[in-house]
Amino acid sequence: MKLAFCLAILTALTGAAHSTGIPQAERRSGYSFMTPDTRAMQDEDTANPGMLWVLDGEALWKRKAGTADKACADCHNDARVSMKGVAAHYPAFEQALGRPVDLEQRINLCRTNHQRAAPLAYESRELLALTAYVAEQSRGMPIETDKDPELSPFIDKGQRLFTQRQGQLNLGCANCHDDNWDKKLAGSPITQGQPTGYPLYRLEWQSLGSLQRRLRACITGIRAQAYDYGSPELVELELYLMTRAHGLKIETPAVRP
Amino acid sequence: MPSALINVPAKARRGDVIEIKTLMSHIMETGYRHTASGAVVPRDIITNFTCRYNGTEIFRADFYPAISANPFITFFTTATESGKFEFEWTGDKGFSETASAAITVE
Image 1 (cartoon, chains in turn cyan, green):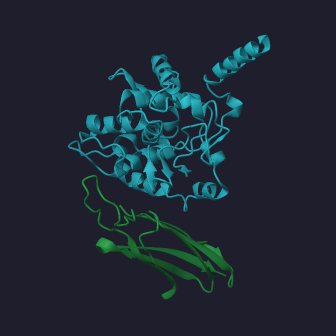
Image 2 (image 1 turned 30 degrees about the vertical axis):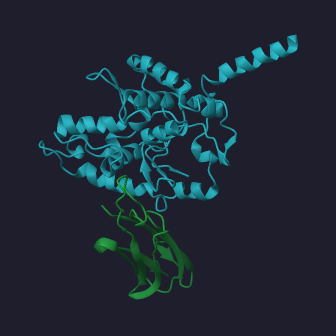
Image 3 (image 1 turned 90 degrees about the vertical axis):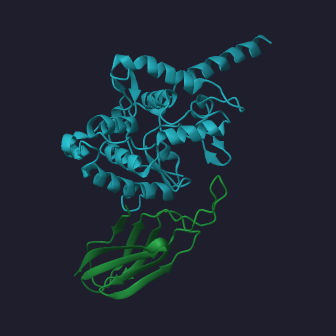
C-alpha cells in the first residue's frame, strides 16, 4: 500500500516535470518524425512546393502597394540582408499595442501604418507568401525568443494555454506534445509540436498554412472552440511555442504530412 | 501568380540518362467539392503537360481531377545534344504557362 502510494507520488512528480517542457537535448523538429520521401521533398528547393510561395513573396516584396505607393523593399531594401534572423525572434513585443505580435501581424502593421494599404487577410496567398519569404531568410538559424522582459507575462499566459485542458475531449496541448511525443496516434507519430517551419506546406492542406491555422486545427481536434485568427490567445501560444523550441533551427518553408 | 520550379542538370555527358523535375503552382480544384451553401466549386485543373527537347516532344502527360495541387512531375530522358528544354502546362479557364531550361551536353 505504502509502495503504491509512493509510486503514485513519483508518477505525479515526473508528470509535473514533463509539463514544463522538453529538455534541450531531447527537442526534435517535426522533420525528424517524417518519412524519407517527405524529408526529400523539403530538402530540395525545386521539389518543395513551399518555395512557390517564397517566389511569390519575393515578387510582392518589391511591388508597390497602398496610398503611400511604397514597396517593402523601399524601406527594408534587400530582404536577404534586412530580414535575416527576424523570424527566429518572433512573436515580438509591439510597444504601440502593448502586446506581442507575430510575423503576419507585423507585416500587416507595416502595410497599414507605412504603406497605407488594407491589411491582408489571414491565410491569403499574399500574406502567406510574404511571411514565407521573410521567414525563409532565417532558414538554418536557431530560434531565440526576444529577451524583452515585457514578453514574459505573455509567455506565461501561453504556457498556461498550452497546459490547460479544454474541449469535449478534455485535453491540453501538453498531454500529447509534452507527455506522449514519442508515441503514435492512429498510426501517425505524435510530434513535439515544435514550430520550426512555419508557414509550411502541409500535404493534407495541399497548400501553405500558418502556425495559427495549425493551432486552430489542433484545437478543433480536441473538440474545443478554436480561437479566432489574430486573437491574443493564439499569439501567446505561438510565443510560448517559440520559447519552448529555443535552439531548434528555422526550416521555413517546411513540408509536413 | 503562377510560377514553376524546374530542375534540369546544367551539364551532362552525351548518352547520360538525366532526371528532369518540374513543379507547377496550381490549385487543382477537382470540381467535386461544394461550398457551405451547396454550390459546386467549378473544376479548375491543369489538363495537359508537355516537354520538348530542342523542339521534339519527349514527354506528355494528361492530368485528371485526382492529381493533387501544385503537381510535381519527374521523368527521365537521354542527354543527346546541347540545347533547351521547353515545358508547357495548359488547363481549365484558359490556363497556359511555359518555362524553359538549358543544358550543355559534352
